[in-house]
Image (spheres, rainbow, N blue to C red):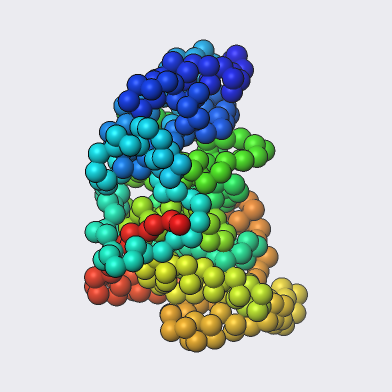
Length: 393
């Protein structure tokens, strides 16, 4: 296959006219950095948010001309919104604001809050066939969030639900390894992708689209676009629940999901020590501010049972997550011990819920899954509010 350079892509994109036919999208500075991997080109085009639906044909034209380049198998192109794009002559002729169309993402610079004096927006459009979307998040890395996510998804499946999992960690996708899935997803019609599948759950991850060693250097708008395409342009089919394995922290990915996706609730994962709990509080506060119900807290690596003696050791302390849950008034979902079994099966791509379903660890995850589903039913029964309007200053 002929290697394609960014310069070749940009040169071809110069044939695409800008908004209102003024110049071309490259020389107008509307094209993000171009990322090319395995014959696929990824980039975004910045437009005024209120014109996203109107300018979707421009996005389609950019996608078409790039796919015509010899050596390019596919192109992932999205429109992103940025306030700077709304300040030029094209913006001056923009019509009155209207809801952005598919692919539009929010401006990622600044802080998010509900628009003052305005009620929350109506609920964002859901994913066809998907009953509920649950985010699994943590305030910091290294607390076992992805391992918890995959075992929670498998435990929900073991409890009789139809389950999918979206790996939203663009920089460090874990699901291909955790679920022992290799290969590339198939494009079945138009821009729709067929998700990968193993152990009876459907999976989508950036790890299926780029090589494992490739370093992702995308900025906010590209992350937002990729997340929305992996979520909305995948043939999920009929699911009771879609588990979203969030990246650690409270950045672009979390705000994108909160603003554009009707999250039914969030599960927070923490270890018992004070440092992890400080960061977990940040995650809790973020979901609270964007009005996403917190379904509860899981204390991971809660304690260690020595396999040779059976003695218990509280390596990271114990009970901190339970106390934090009680303090802020959210459910405590359960304690997951630090065991060799969980670590080894995760590394092998055979999570403990499927490799040892009658073991103690699997039963712990299934009990947590039961509590999560109960909390979700409670929240939905109360009529959770839709996603809020978010503005950036």
